[in-house]
Image (tube, rainbow, N blue to C red; front, side, top):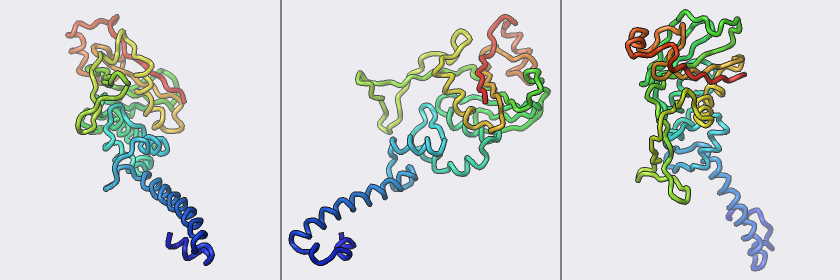
Length: 258
């Protein structure tokens, strides 16, 4: 208001004019306040500001960082603050694995492999440690080198459903964490639901290199193993001892084109 008064002519500072000035100043103050608030929301969760769920969604969309299923707001906000560093290595296997781990940390914490057409492999264990090696891999038998394969070992993966009230409001703990219930296996009858499939391929679709023409996500579960894939888990001997047969469970393949 002080700055507006200094810039207005004398007749706008007197009885009737002052009211006009005050009305304009109030609107200007409101505009400035909203502008400052909007800038602060670009740094979600940075102390001492509280986390705004609406701002998280908008900021995540803008920065192309997906929020994982059941990911707490505080952790997601912290990830959004590091978006610039994350995108510096976008398209590489390490960034892809790290984003997948962050996305699935609260819903699908399993081993993940990223294998290139050449047989170069990076795999991340359940604790986030990444190992690089090379395997003999004939891929799909084609000479299309711009293809990658992602293997997820989902032996014990379960689907989580959010607990809600009759009004559809999500139930939370006193710390604000969502309450969920385990509703069954991720893979039923050798298939996954469209909703779960979309959750699984979302990050690989967005974080694979731009030149990759096809990404195949392979879900290995139970006794299901992929022929000619190196180092099956736990081993071919264990696979045979389990009573599995060639006509038994087969891996689930989810394909991402482009």
